[in-house]
Image 1 (cartoon, helix red, strand yellow):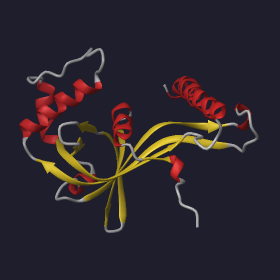
Image 2 (tube, rainbow, N blue to C red):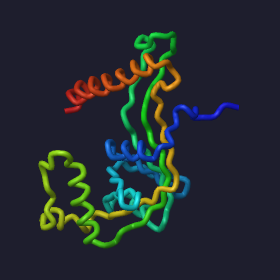
Image 3 (tube, rainbow, N blue to C red):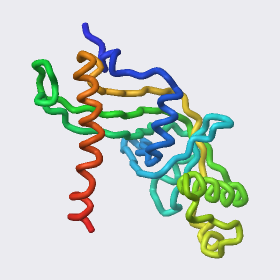
Image 4 (cartoon, one colour):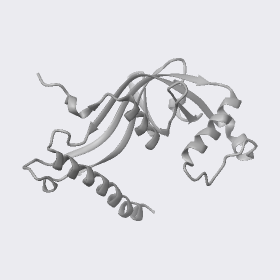
Length: 199
């Protein structure tokens, strides 16, 4: 009986997974209540000091009531992905799809302190503004103060890590490099026409 996902598509190096979280912080957070999944997309910041994920959620989001009390969540982080045509390989292959995904599980704790929430919003903004720091969220920003009652802060203790790095690792060196270059090319090429259609 074969294993799935194949072992060569799994990355067990936590440092590699942390780098994905930092580079692609928009997470898909999934909670289950009465057998019904609740799903929210939100940025989560990895806190190096204790390895927890820190996030904020709107009080009117129905998932907010589950982001507390050690409730279990599943978190998905998505890195680059693209279709891989057999035409890029030097060997005979079939079409495939390459991607980087993280599947994490964790338990949630609500942070009720408004001071902690405020500090967390400032820290998250500072992280997301890297490297140029074109905007600084000041502690006395009146718009932030006016919205603190509508935002809940939480932290997630990660209990399980699974890195799915499907990057043509089972091919020869030249084909692995070709797939890598295609992943780079496709992710740069695909975004511009898409954005032009949306905006």
